[in-house]
Length: 281
Image 1 (cartoon, rainbow, N blue to C red):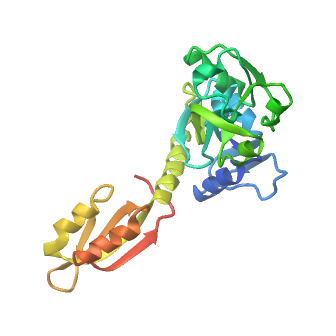
Image 2 (cartoon, helix red, strand yellow; image 1 turned 90 degrees about the horizontal axis):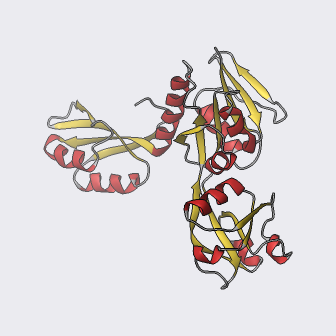
Image 3 (cartoon, rainbow, N blue to C red; image 1 turned 30 degrees about the vertical axis):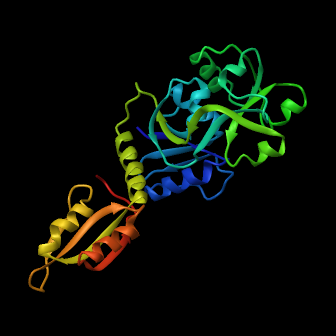
């Protein structure tokens, strides 16, 4: 049976979702007007849907897998489960109000809160025992306070520039850390889902790691492997030069330049870094 996957058709998640699927070896649409695409080689069918609707389709079992935002998943109340954080589309939700007027969660009691994510905000308030009125507004919630519709807003905050321009400031703790996530239903089992999941996971690991090769004297090898132990230990091969070995190891991309300096300082030479495009661990 063909695996049916929902992909964001527009918005901040769309291009990044398409990129990770292509890197995982799946065909993707070339025309943004296409609503569906069949990848017969991999026995997968993709459906390009509004990001806000994806959790509902997956939760109802109409589609097997989806890529959406954690915020949209939680806001929908759909019976779908987060399987994997995909590492893009990160955002934070905060409460915000007129600068200097509010300082803590307790200040929200009895207030009117405007947001595009009613489900997320109501759940947060319930868990913290705060009684407040929540109103759904789609887009430009910053103006709701100026127009007298709300006392406070709850929204995604990136740089804070838009809030400051409206005379607002964040307060209280972060409501939610969101990101793009892979979702499915816990009671839906599909033969090809594990293959799909491993491919995506392989790309995420490949993006976070690089392959490092270097030559080093055997006597210095213990110090080198202590600095760079790798995911499951290094691969070590003898060199034609007596007393020397060649080493290959996966290392985190972050900090890899510093690691090259450290290895060089203990005697490693011919140090190379190579991108990893995909892997299975």
